[in-house]
Image (cartoon, rainbow, N blue to C red; front, top):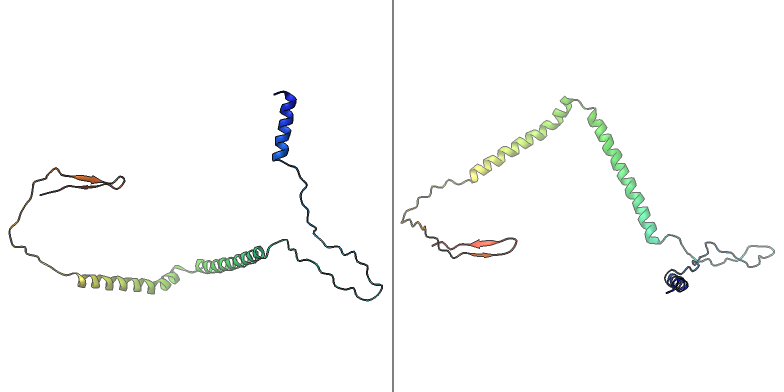
Length: 155
């Protein structure tokens, strides 16, 4: 293939795959060319409702602003609480946490008493012959790839 044929083929491939057509432009405004009356009000002209942003996108944007404002309010509330806790003395913190510590200790004591009361005392006495099997027959089977299970028969 000569250079001129190769250049023509390359141009054909580029034109076929990467066409440079003019982009489609949509008007962003409406121009009314009708004549205005000499006096009085003008009649209404229909204008199409072509919004730039779809309604669902505008709804999501408004919801995002609301969520952001809510989170900001929660952050301000947390900051105020933490500022208040930072100025509390050790004795004040201990007085606030003392009832919770008492409740936790009482719950632990009640739980321990209930668990001891539920624990049954059993003394099993087994009577009868005892058989002790020590024979192992080599009849084992293994199944499985990742979670293998080996089964040995003991008689």
